[in-house]
Image (cartoon, rainbow, N blue to C red; front, top):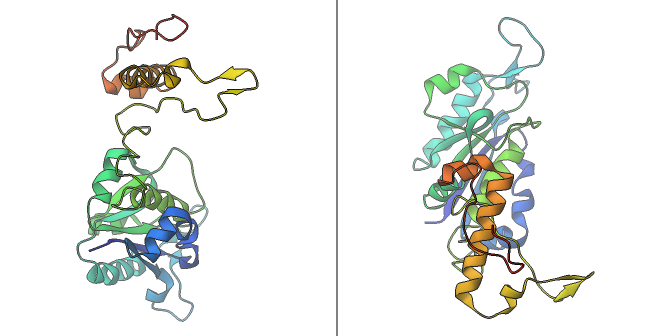
Length: 247
């Protein structure tokens, strides 16, 4: 059974969007994943197809109605009963690569995309919904966040990336940021590819890449480095670079 993305949105025309191109688009055409983009307004009960109303207690903006969303959610969940239900919201748990991998290993996800000021809290109280955030900033709606989440999952599906191991060393897969990459020409604007990468010595190359990943993580993301087990303020490794300096 292929990975299924069921997306509840006011703008189903946004899907597959960029996921219809490149590796994800090819995988969609080949049936490696499936998309069900659901228009929330189709489940509104009034002739205006209203999905929102003014916030209780006053305030700016509009709030998405729990009754309309619940009807849409329940109908979609009935078609995809195996899918976990997620809502893209800035108050959700930060999305991490480990969660992406678990989703990619499963049957897919049913994703609710909010709009306006947010969603009536009673929906979250009444349904088992995992709230997910892709960062500490505000978007116009959950659609772009859903596309980001799905892209992260789809690239991990079997047969999507060219080589099964091509994502193993990428940022966050090992708890570290990724090491620097180089390619031809050997020299560009007076800058040369590090000699170790041209040595053919795979053990030395692996050690260099590990040391670089640790150093970059320690300097740029001390929060990740600390979670990885590094001691703040201490060199992450004793490996020496080609210029003789330590990491």
